Image (tube, rainbow, N blue to C red; front, top):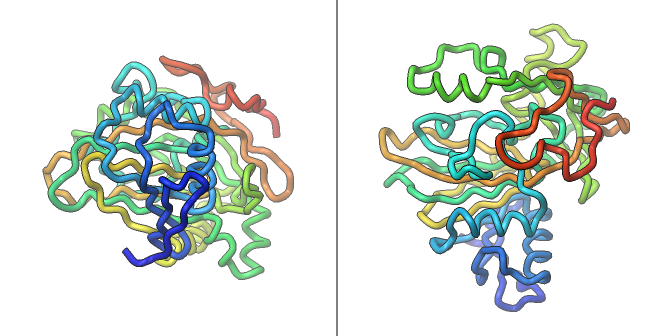
Length: 318
């Protein structure tokens, strides 16, 4: 990789950019729940700046320490419909079901207070393929021509976990059971298309494959406008691609990125574990908050709190 490296106050920790607009590798840290405050603050600042950061050689990290590290960033939150693989917070990203997404998305945007951060740990990686891409949605917004910015800021979009709506094509048999669980409670949430980031103040595009339609537009118009805006997210200069090795950890700001798990590893096993950190309800450029349309409230998952419970967000207010 060719980039400049910076040294934080903690001189053992270095941050090396891997792309001009997104991505950095953090070295000199052993992840876990015992990190000191200065190191955690440096990691948080790095992910806010670079949107996604990567840690190599974290083979020591098990489910307990994965969760413990997450707690240093906020309150872990389980997936609202899919049971965890450890009985607590770990969500399975395996290539026999959800790992073959081949879709740009931000995690769990079908609920109002979707996760602020996601932490993904590689347990088994294929001999080739299976990379993940991330895109900087703040850079995508900043790169819009002014007329498109004005349009985007006026729009709101309905996000859903209903695969019949977001993926009308027929699904393969091995995915059917997973998707039945994924949609066991069907959510619809209206978000602003442009969100004001609660920590950085940046304006970001809130799109991705859970977006079903734009409010107030007919289907063909909605698809056309979303396609134009999403194309700016996916511009190569706004993206970074990560080639996994066993023991790698990726930490990203889920409020300012989309990601895409590439399905190109044939039948080789690919097993990763994700812990998500609770977020707050988005606020648009016009000051309006996201709105839960269905169900009446976000149900509590099998373990832990419902999304948004740690941030005090009133999930059904406009």
